[in-house]
Amino acid sequence: MPTLPPALAAALAGVRSVAVITGAGVSKAAGLPTYRGEGGVYEDPREGDRTIEDLTGATFRREPDRTWDRILRLARGAAAARPGPVHHLLAAAARRMPGLFLLTQNVDGLHGRAGSPDVVEIHGNVLRIRCLRCGHGAPLPAQALAVGASRPSCPACGGPVRPDVVLFEEPLPREPLLRLQAALVEQSPDLVLLLGTSALFPYIVAPARHATLRGKASVEVNPDPTPATPAVRHALRGTAEAWLPVLLEAVPALQGLRA
Ligand code: OAD
Image (tube, rainbow, N blue to C red; front, side, top):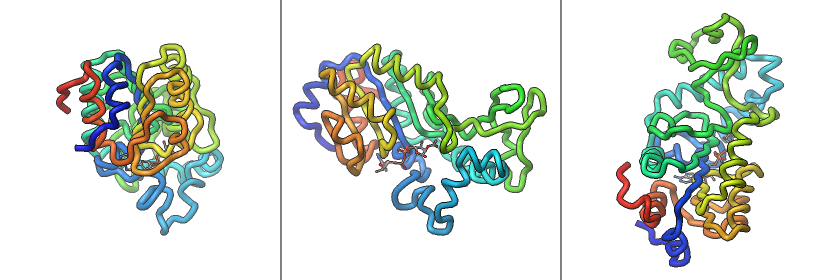
């Protein structure tokens, strides 16, 4: 078990409210690839740059089958995966601390499947669809996951649907951004924890910087430095699986959790 720096252990002893932001690194232990880095979805040498191009809003409008093909590959992986240790531990933490705020950039739905209530999925969920005609949202039908299956349609009106995810070049949905703002800026939790994200987006780094500037605890857990590293008070190198139990155990209200 890794050991916390003494200054961080002291800070965690006074923590009563927690916000967690996760990225693909927390699903790695569940067997899903990250996006970037070795073995990443965007770094498959057989695909070159096509993956990102497949996942843009412009490609979806022009060639929806191309985007669907890519999304369904991600969806098959997500559907086959089981939540990992970090998902389970965060769900246990939320049961103990009902106000715990959890925002994920992951589109695999694994936090919800582990039992985390009320997860803010800021980039959406590949296992959900949204109707382009009537706006109805629904789970992706299981039969759509079969290789060669035809594109799903809206269960309410039969209209064309899109994956309920944010594609490249598309704006973020308003509601999760407002919830991020309310939870992190207005409520200002005692601890902001970034877990397993390359933190490439300003809206992911900003909450950590905000906590740091307010004198709160801000922690990054990642094997490598990221753009968030200069913004956090404590950067812990290593995996989320190794560090999260140690971090939560140091918060009095979260001691003795079982994943
Ligand atoms: P990335 O693939 O960009 O980054 C994953 C991060 O996890 C890297 O910084 C790794 O060093 C780190 N990592 C790997 N294994 C880890 C472990 N066991 N514990 C902790 N950290 C680990 O994934 P995200 O940051 O989530 O957008 O990517 C952000 C967004 O970019 C995704 O949501 C996706 C992508 O485009 C959409 O789907 C809209």
